[in-house]
Image (cartoon, rainbow, N blue to C red; front, side):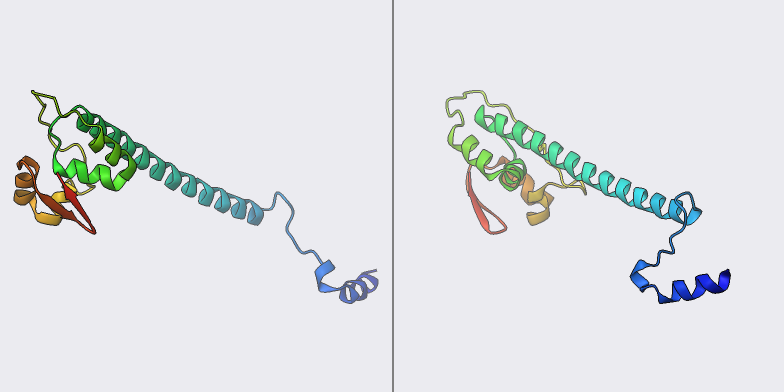
Amino acid sequence: MINSIIPAILTQPVSNRTHSAPKNHPLNLRDELARHAEQAESARQTAEIQGRHSRDMQKAMEIAARILNGDNVPQSDKDFLLETSPGMFKLAMSARRLDNNDPNDYDALARDRDGSSPAAQLFGEDMARLLSTSAGGVVSSGSVDLMY
């Protein structure tokens, strides 16, 4: 009987031969587990990126609200808003209250992952502090010149 099966298998084209393990076989389960682990890692990374983006947008909206109210906002926060949402920055700067006689002074809301503000990375902590308290001027942040 085996002698009659072997010639039949050998005459079949290779594409018709299936040598897969049964569905419950440990090799298939390991492969499936590995695929699920990869999918879980991908989902975790996506959630982390979305969470970071959500936190950045929340900070950007808070900074824009402070600018709209006519309050004193550190230059590092203005830089962060410009990087995060240029449209929101333009709107906030063009629609800000100029008649606010008692503006609030705020500390920097936006911080980079290493704990320093974007202006501090460009100019150093002392210069960033000086720029955030100055009355006016031009600050170059990469390829964009900011007037405040």
